[in-house]
Length: 409
Image (tube, rainbow, N blue to C red; front, side, top):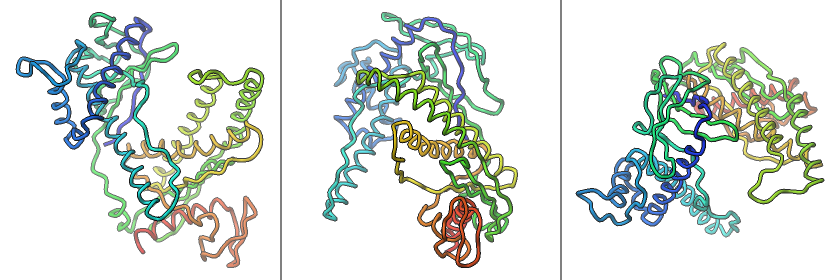
């Protein structure tokens, strides 16, 4: 089921009440997280049963006059349940990471290797955005909404006018979160849409008419190189998505300004953000480019009827040597690749297109035709078998080849 988030802006009224509500939300969530941490058997229950058990342990009622951990706040039931479910989600995430860390440590020690990674730690500070369940909000029309807020002593209903993107027809609205920013307040609505069931990758590769879109993501001017392949390996279309040089130049200039300012003033305190406006600008530039490239990849796949988009699963990175701006620029260029993948994944899912990834080993080193090692002279290559051409196109062909070999070998 495709999901996405619609962001709408609230009129700037009673921001202090929204901040008090968020502070109380985090305080209650931290309280429930501490209970789960001490009684982790609760996580063995389903979310619904875990919520019931935590309410039994903390909420005083006529049938439960003496709970084991009485809740000291007088809060609405739906607000309490939103806090409990947030705490359950955070606890599941923490204990899952802890288990993976313990397994990795045991595996390394069994092989006699030194394990250098630190264990995960619980949240030190809770900064979750307030989640409004039904009963904490009402009267949503797309143009206005009423929220139940805490003013420091009591709960009040406040009506807000909304601006921004509307929810499209056919999408079902979930419970919103209030996101407090420096000079505005946003409501983030998760929305989802029903769609026909999508076949798994293993089922789709059996179709002789299958088409896939293989994508090679780069940090140079060609941010993405795409190729459409049939199930027999025939390449039917190619597209280069450029703009990397312009992006890297803009980002490097801003990073250079930050480096200059840091050399003059030094770093701020640990909890303070230096050059916040410049960092926000860099983030927005990267985010916009990730959306642009991911949309073009998807449009290319839709244009040629591809039902699977395949990327390489690259997780190794060596930053360039040089000044701060050069190192930071190469690091953010690498991060951009991951963002493009995730944006393409959720956008493609809306159209019933699956994303997949393959092992990147040797995809840039070997010839897609004969499998021999190529002589690279970027951006071109030559091979002993007589093939020559673009290194990026050869990589794309290897990605498509690896994908089909995984399911046909």
